[in-house]
Length: 98
Image 1 (cartoon, rainbow, N blue to C red):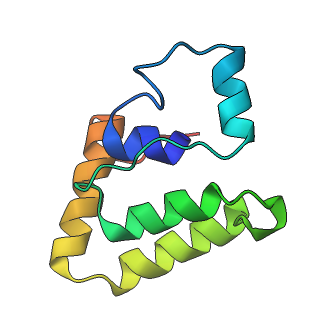
Image 2 (cartoon, rainbow, N blue to C red):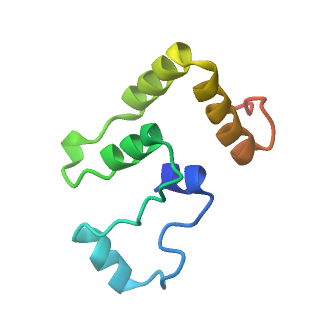
């Protein structure tokens, strides 16, 4: 859900009450609709993280490796998309300090 919110700029299920009914729907597999404007790469990541079988979901380390490999092998257009998303989330192209 975090990736969905970062990529779309929208709160998942923002149009619904966040109540027991929503929790039940999520438990039974209901997920927000991913807008067509989301690049296929991010749609793939979001859907992998939403897999109903926890063992099929990528770990944080796998996600880090996957995203880094894509950024390293990206063409300029993909790097620009990544930078735009990063800027929208953090407000700058500088990585936040931990």
